Length: 173
Image 1: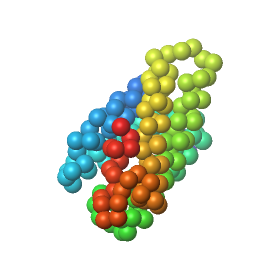
Image 2: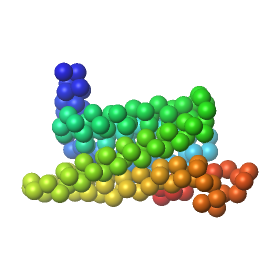
Image 3: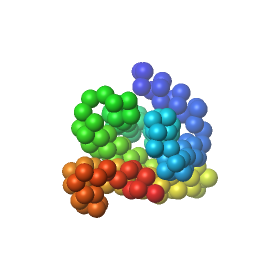
């Protein structure tokens, strides 16, 4: 089946799946505050988000079901984020959908990674990177949740009418 072939090819690439996830999250968290002012910077931040999505799918995709669930949330998150970055469609609606799909994706990734980390198998360095990744993913997930709340109720985070909304980096770092 095509999904199983894709899953196995990603598994071969990512032998230390959680290590690559950890590195990609660190890249996103460190680079995002410095790059969001220009279009090129936002594209680079989106590239870092794609790295996190791919690494998360590879980390949780140890069996077919989590792999498929991660793809079902990750692909729309990427599409709506791309729409925001390149100015397609209704920006406000795309922001809301992007935030919701990202938050759902990271929630799924956190649940499956916690299952992996707390499995009774022997503790490995990959599990330790998985635990650290879960900790960072919780921060990123809440960043997207807070972004969605801000779209619904801007004064909840001190944004006055006419002001620019708070950026993602305010909520995730």
